[in-house]
Structures are given as structure tokens and as C-alpha cells.
Image (tube, rainbow over all chains, first blue to last red; front, side, top):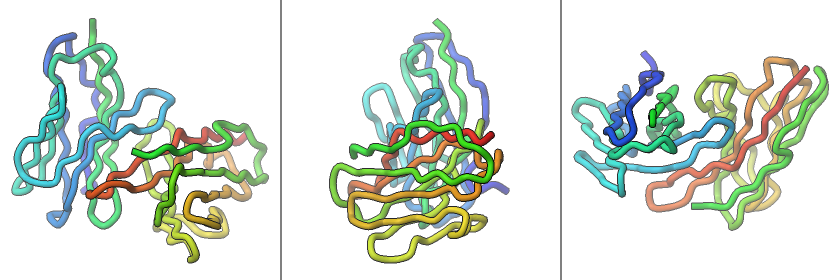
Amino acid sequence: QKEVEQNSGPLSVPEGAIASLNCTYSDRGSQSFFWYRQYSGKSPELIMFIYSNGDKEDGRFTAQLNKASQYVSLLIRDSQPSDSATYLCAVRTGKLIFGQGTELSVKP
Amino acid sequence: SAVISQKPSRDICQRGTSLTIQCQVDSQVTMMFWYRQQPGQSLTLIATANQGSEATYESGFVIDKFPISRPNLTFSTLTVSNMSPEDSSIYLCSVERGNYNEQFFGPGTRLTVL
């Protein structure tokens, strides 16, 4: 079992819809959780982090954490074509472990 | 966040040669990290570099292949030695900032080995 798992996608949503990106992790001792956005040919950019159960909102982005289910998600409301990128989930268990990433495509 | 620069941004190298990648941060940090991202893959941690001590390498990475220097609190280098085409990757440095040790990445070095 991989330590951090994401669906590779691609996930395709129409412009204006909600994009839902999911991530599961194996280590129950994980302490903090991060979402990065990576445009093609660019380096990862931190967009959200969360460390306690529940929701955390920042603009159009909401991160959700459920430690009992070992599940973290990222919701993007009112998706825009500029949101098209690969989204990487990262989990801190001592060091930072990255998932494989989910490719998101927002169609105009 | 952090302002991180890397040099070179990209290079094409011949098999058997070595390349040194530089990473410069805008302010002092305790640890710097080096990652590799192979084509179509996620990020894999190569090593953690602390100033004044030997770098700590992850499983599968060795100092002879990836020597690291950390001469001060704002600078580090990663050398990719005796390169083969399998070393073709993006190499990224990163630093931690903030209360939850958020990690921020440099722009990366795109290496192609022929």
C-alpha cells in the first residue's frame, strides 16, 4: 500500500463547477496535510494546508480532513480554466510524503 | 512563503559527466531539501541538508552519486555524478517556513542526460 494515494485522473470538470480532489494516507500518526498545485513545466506551489479535523476555507479552496478515515480532500469552487493543473497531496509523517498527483482539467 | 532561486534552470549533459545545481534562499533556514521528480511522477526526497553537518540521504540515494554541500544558512548545492539517462529528471530544492513547517519549492532544474 502506498503511503499517500491519489487518483491520477485526469479529472475533467466544466467551468464554474466544483472540483473535488481526494487523497488517502496510511500513517495514522500523520500530523499535517498539504495541497500543492503544479502547472506543467513549473514547480509545486503550496495552496492549502490543514492540521485538524474538519474544513478549512481559503477563497475558492476548501481543504477537508478526516483523520479517523485517513482522508483529506480539496474542493475548488467555481472552477476556472486557470485551475487546470496537477494537484499534489502531501502528508507529513516526520518527512513530507507526496502522492502521485491528480491532473485536473477545467473545460470552458 | 520563501524566495528560492536555482541554477541552472535546465541543462543537457552527456552520459558519465557531473552537474552541480545551486540553490539560494532569500533568508536563513535550518534545513534545505533536495527532491527529484522524474517524468510523469511525483516528488521523491533525495536528502536533507543541514548547515554544518553531513546531509541525510533517503533510502535509494547515496552520497557518492548525489553529494550535497551546505556551506551556509542560505545556500546549498546538489551534484549529480557520473550521470546516466535514468538521471533525467527535474531536481528541486525546498525550504520550510511557518508554524507548520510549510515547504516551499524553488523553480527547479530540468536535467536531460543523453
